[in-house]
Length: 341
Image 1 (cartoon, rainbow, N blue to C red):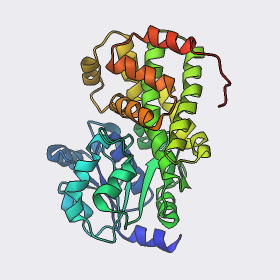
Image 2: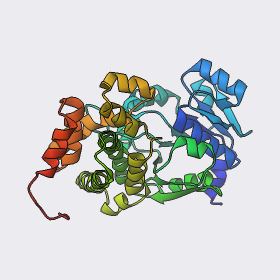
Image 3: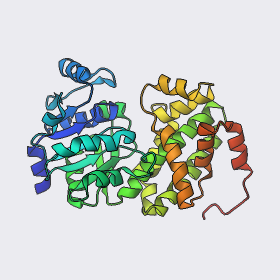
Image 4: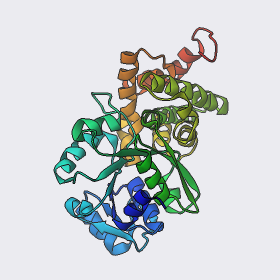
């Protein structure tokens, strides 16, 4: 174990955000023997989790390991920690960082598992973090093809941790990994974050397509050409092209487009079944990142002049009431071109 990993192991890790993914990550860290604190904003739910030993709302079948502590107060959760992992929806990241900022010690290293662009600014999570907190502290992002329920159940899983600080990425990867969980590292934080954001938009499209019985051919075309769009925008923003062939690109895209554990895919399925957007969001009962991210991607692709016809079509279906059949027709009748451009 590296010196940075050893230091990590001697201090508690704080997971901030007790939804399904935050809870699953807290369980995984605690399984590896690290003292882990889990904080959530709902105090009543925190008290219930501490009493029951599991998260009855988001992950009812995953019992907490003995090293997982449920903390009611934010200041207590981060006291005497070296590392903090934020697991909240991207739309609330800036406001939460502003709340966290006066409580942070200068030495604390920060990671997050938030996916999506900031609405209004088009900023990626790491840019929001730097905007609020500056860039003097080490930071990292966790992303990849992971469903919280399967991580909570201890099923074999892999993801990627990206950071410009190689030591921090390696320390987190080492302390998160176990017999059934493998973490890889990367220095391409832009690529990892772009992949984690756009796959949610494409998963909504996959749900729409499958809900309308367009078939497996359509789904695989959407995934493959969607990957090309994801890569184009990522490279335009400064990402490495190869990143999108990895876990946080192709891996996460395939997962969310093909499995009904994906909230974004289920959202598309509900819309295809005739639900209104409001009714579909209410039925899902959790944040559907792909819905808001579709708007952010739409704005960003125009600013960056990036050709993304599938994402544009999904945006039109969600925000301009364009029938999905018309979206498909427009995609299929576009001018013939080389596949790899």
